[in-house]
Image 1: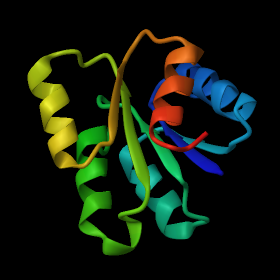
Image 2 (image 1 turned 90 degrees about the vertical axis):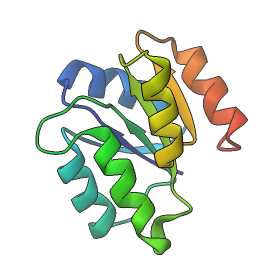
Image 3 (image 1 turned 180 degrees about the vertical axis):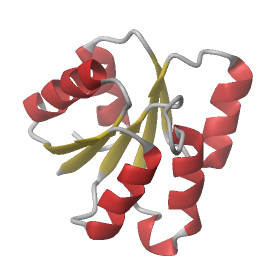
Image 4 (image 1 turned 30 degrees about the vertical axis):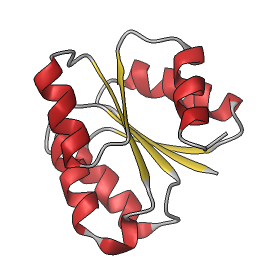
Amino acid sequence: MRALVIDDSRAMRTILTKIMTGLDFEVEAVGDGAQALEAVQRGPRPDVCLVDWNMPVMNGLDFIVEVRKNREWRDITLMMVTTEAEQANIVRALAAGAHEYVIKPFTSDIIESKLAMLGLL
């Protein structure tokens, strides 16, 4: 299984990469939504993307909207991992096509349980 970690924080990319590698995912990590779109286009296609909301160049919500526009990418699981905790933002992300929503700070157990619930473990 392949995971794409999308976060402008180097520390958060490192944390999520460590968690996902520990769950036997091959991981690529990028710093914004535009880089993530390039990674998805370039391939190999990820099974899951862990997406931060607030990033420069292209934010996470815009990335999700762009991925969902492409029929060939509909099978990619999208999980927001963000500090955005307002109910309205959670609804916006899920309506745009995110499958799950994790609010920072989180534990590795939370990530693992969300992935299991999504059928990725």
